Length: 185
Image (cartoon, rainbow, N blue to C red; front, side):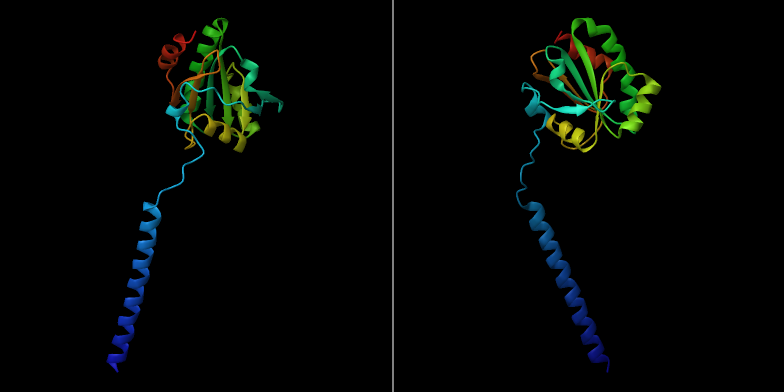
């Protein structure tokens, strides 16, 4: 009587081992197969390239095109209200905007968030520069500006001719911004 039970257990173990081996082989083949390239360009590929055109709504819901700021040096900053480093760098951007506006510098915030939290946050901190808003649309724009992984903050410095000159993933310090900005003014 114990022989059929032992034989049944042995077959069950064999089946489990076979399924595990097939699963492992499938995972290995999937992970080692060449992956298709993403549609996004990496940040380094965008340096020296013309900025992608886009239009997103402002705080009042009106569509605004990036072309509105043609001829200016632009800091395009992708951020969200729930992102602590994004919130920390905003006062530096506002101060830099104030100091260099007369020389043709323009900061543009692109909030990857819902309009209400953005409007409340901007009212609280008084960013002092234009804010564009979008969720999926803004994420698609961020992707076109080299942020394929969706990390925030993400900043892009564009020269007067609309050429991308600097890209920073993560918090951009005031010193780093000014160092890059002065090369373009």
